[in-house]
Structures are given as structure tokens and as C-alpha cells.
Length: 320
Ligand code: AMP
Ligand code: MG
Image (cartoon, rainbow, N blue to C red; front, side):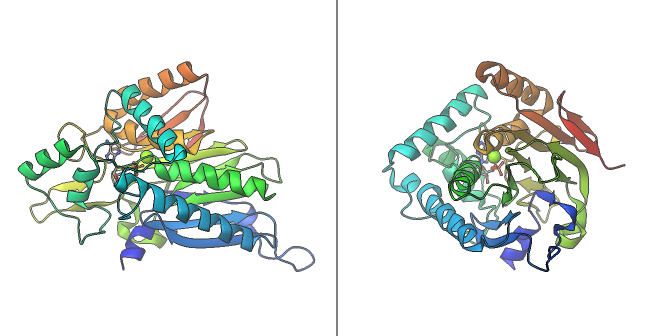
């Protein structure tokens, strides 16, 4: 049941090549596909060449290794024990840079607070904690890389696939999407952005808010308040993206932020920060990140009224 509920929370639907035709002209398969349950979400990889299933399964094995190093809910992970290897240290440094850049909106020290709310349901949650408990959890300053790790892992999976000559593929780790290589048709990748709160919790009824076109070797990551959320008996709505000052779900003028660009890790961090900051602060953050790093990250923010705010230069077509 939990698995099913999390599947419906997948943020991004991929619109793949022509109906992903199962059979080529000679009757053979035209693609390879593997799916798995990890990072507390549904993940899949689709390569547009046949016969690569074993490589895709190896890619999931690699992703699992990263999960066991980086997850705050794995008892002996490096994040829990504090014994970091050089790679984890570097990721922590990246995360701390985003914390600084975002003025603290992106915060890697919310581990104890997230554990209290338990939006992921690892300890029987979600719960609404008391104000005192939240205060104590905030002061614990314990680590949580949940807002950046999936993106980082998606990048490492993409590197692994390239090293094994998987040249054209879509990787989706619970909606952290990487489009590897260039489509055979030469067209851009078309990524459907989920319409927030659509489908009434039913996977098959989720709708698309619009389609985002991105070039080869791009990532698109969406953070949204409709994912891992619940309505309490008194009607209050709670979601998993927290205001680091209060420890409560953040209030924002946007219900989802989709970030497109080269690094899935960067997209992941920016997407979470964007929801916390709201549309004006988020646009400023992304523009200043681009300027500082000579990068070209774009955004689609979806507002509560269904309207969207799109960065200049990004090709996004809303559903009418
Ligand atoms: P994402 O789905 O990438 O937006 O990440 C959300 C996850 O990151 C949550 O489930 C928490 O584990 C953690 N988190 C919640 N609020 C924040 C925040 N303000 N900054 C960084 N991480 C957060
Ligand atoms: Mg994130």
C-alpha cells in the first residue's frame, strides 16, 4: 500500500519516443527497461537500445549503494554515523553552499525535524508534532540530504550508464529525471510536468500541467507540496518541504517548482529551495546561481491557481 501511495507521488511523467514501440521492424525489442523500489520511491530506467537490462540493473545496484551511504533513515549510513568518505564530504560541502546561497531556505540540518513529521512513513507517520518537539528537533541540527541526494545519485547513475555505453536513456528516480544523450529523431526531450493535486491520489488519473522541452543530456527535477502531504482531522494541510526557521511546512505562492539544467544534483537543490523561497526569491536565487557559475538553469513554477511562471529561454507549453 505504501509503495502504491508513493508511486502516485512521482512528480514527472516522461513522454517518450513514439509510443516506445515494443518491437522493431524485424520484430526485436527496441529498448531496455528496468524498474525498482529504492530511495523510498518508484524508479525506472529506459534505454533506447535493446539488450541492456543487466546494465540497468547494475545501475540500480549502484543507486542502492549510494542510498545506504547517504540516507538519514539507514541506521549505519555515513550521514547517521558521521563517518564520511571524501565523496560524501564533497556532497555535504555542495549542500552547505546551497544553504548559504539560498539564505538558509535550503537547509541540510532538518534531519531530526523531518524524522518527527515522518512524511516518508518510515516510522508509521506522518504525524503533527508539538511545537516543543519541533523546537528541540531544530536545535539538534542533524543532517538530512533528502533534498539533494536523489539528484546527486541520478547524476552518478547517468555517469555509470555512459561508462557502459548506454547512450540514450531516461532515468527517473521518483521524478528526478535525467535525459541521457539525444533522441534518435534529433528532437528535444519532452517532459510532462505533473498537475499538482491531480488524479485524487490515483496514479492512472494524474494529469499533466504542461510539457517542458529540454535538449540532450539534461535533467528536470520537480519539488512540490502535493507530494508526501496529508490533511489532518481538523482540516489543516501539511507537506514535506519545511521552513527551516519554524520547522513547519513552508508557506509559498508556488505549489511546485521544476528546475531544468545540466546537473540533476543542482536541479534538486534549487527545486527544494525554490518552493521555500516562493516565486520572486526563487527566480532571484536561480538567476544569481546562473551568473555566479556561468550556468543555464531554467524554471517552471506552478502557482496555486494553476498558472505558471516560466524562465526566459525555457520552452514550456501549458496544457490548455
Ligand atoms: P525534495 O523532494 O527534493 O524537495 O526534498 C524534500 C526533502 O528534503 C524532505 O522530505 C526533507 O527530507 C528534506 N527537506 C525538507 N525541507 C527542506 C529544506 N527547507 N531544505 C532542505 N531539505 C529539506
Ligand atoms: Mg530537492
